[in-house]
Length: 418
Image (cartoon, rainbow, N blue to C red):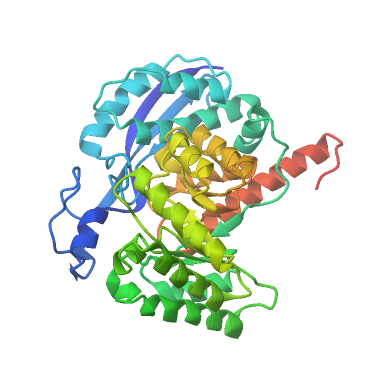
């Protein structure tokens, strides 16, 4: 089978790109609009709808598949690639479409590696482009083999066929309290993320976050099912470093206290500190982890920013600087890199999360479920959007359907179905 034609279509992601540097410098707002001027290159305003490009592949047997190119919410922050935009990137993606047209469909990993080896024009946002194109390539290979994307990945990564769904973690957006209630109703495996992205939400001494975490546990006790024992996940966007002046002992003591407030539930703290370089981030995270261990705390540290690609992730693992890695799938470009990062995390004794972004599209959200089923991270992000319900059902339903398809086909072939 071949790709007879490839085109790019203007599309949109599930939320908004935001200039994180500008938000942290001046969070003033009028409704949904930020009032200050953007700081990060590539932004013409602090908050702007996520722009995306769908790469559509026409296959020689008449089937059509596609994947969505886009960037994460906080594009350009923490060493990340710049914001994807329609103005320059739709035209730039045409060169990728020209390369793909006429290509024979072979192995998924081989096609991704060949794509990444090409010398495209410097105007192309390769991280966003490879993310979307690799989605389409996985579905093209799956179509050629008459299998699911999850089965293709398990074959090529030498993994066993998936048997169970991956735990889903949800994010609240700014509707932090109603989102917790929704997560409880849906018995989400991990909640609520919290979007603790300003001192107003955190508190000058962290007191507002302490109150919020205590409230979450009380809400679970009041309304949660007896067997609902979610992990509690909070993302502080580096603000603990700000209020505690990057003192590792003070940050660890504060994080350990949050862990005590959630017991017996597991507490996970993402990005307590955000430094200006990968080396500084590793050093700070490692110091916090050592202090947590000295305190006897079982809190799990999660790194996100500065762990943007396979090399970055390997450095954090080697330095024993974190307990968990948020493998932010759009930041790794081709989706096979996310799968490999997850496997390397597990081999290195670190729990991987198949993260992504509220900016993911409906299509990228579904395709990443196949990556999750094949690589089995600790969690997968419910995506796209910040509405919780929408992302939860997209991710849950795609995993459920895929597992049912695999089971039904195995049963048809006479093998025992799980």
